[in-house]
Image (cartoon, rainbow, N blue to C red):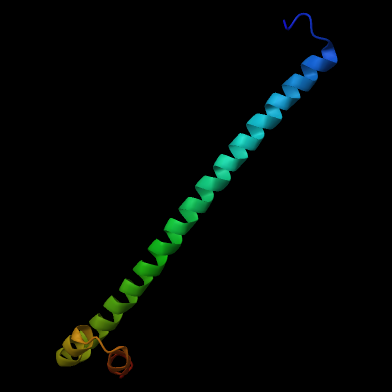
Length: 88
């Protein structure tokens, strides 16, 4: 079917259908990319925030008492680490 043989309504309908299809494709791609980047950002923030807080605690402990700092960083017991980090 040639473009010249189509009626004006059919041409406009075909053009609108193509625009609609392209909009759906672009929207789905944008949604997919946003969701994948959101997961990566959340993971990065959570890990960096934990590491940053540990470094802050370690630095504060080093400034007050290096023995406490080494104990807090070398222990696997979270209760002991929290009790050492919460000392003034």
